[in-house]
Length: 309
Image (cartoon, rainbow, N blue to C red; front, side, top):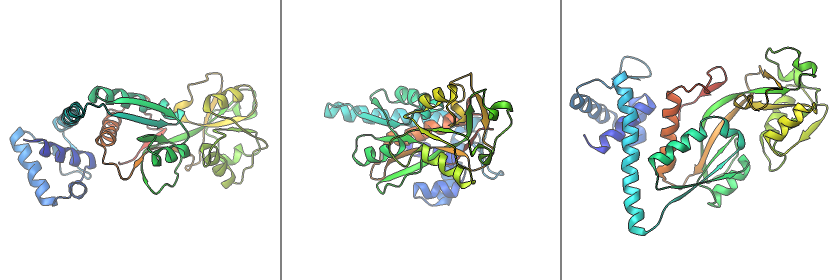
């Protein structure tokens, strides 16, 4: 087997579909199927259960997939290391992020990225989703992790997952008297704390738009700079705030009610430049897929929906 075969296996394992994998690789589907059969014959075991739709990895195939990702990452690292040695440089990779992205997979993904690519100098810049689009166009960051769909012609984006929203409420509020899910209509008429207060469109705009779309209108709107400040003011009984479910452990003294409306979700969006063919971006995607497949405890299925990417 060679590295090209392994990359083609990874494409099939990722898409769970031979036709889609062939399209992404720009090869004929029969040729790809034949190569996977040859790989299975060489290995001496079956990689896929083909009778299911979508196709599934066998237990041995899943282990081979995980090792294949690590091997391809190591191969790319070897190439990058040699290139950088020849040039006498190290690659700086800058990540833009919103604070709430840190309450899920992102720290684990970047730890794994550092292990696979120790040649990278990884830098962090906290910024809003909108600021990330500007920073990507100006090449100040290499990838962004945000929560808002924003338009930027030179930028591509994928949704890694969608997370349910929760209302964080002080115990003294009538809204906190029960713990069952609350509708957006019920939240109308109460004072709300939104964040961030700078750069639009923002998560604050998303929250207010979905509440108003249901006919609700907050009695007061307090705009603050960040999630931590919003939760602090909610604890001080200045109003309630809407947060992604993964942030509900930050202040134990608050009551957290799931928002029942199906559109009340917050996407985690990875953005990067269209003109870049960066192996680091592709590696981050693979590391994210692998982590999601492990079903970590924090990735609670009742609060998260994983999308294909």
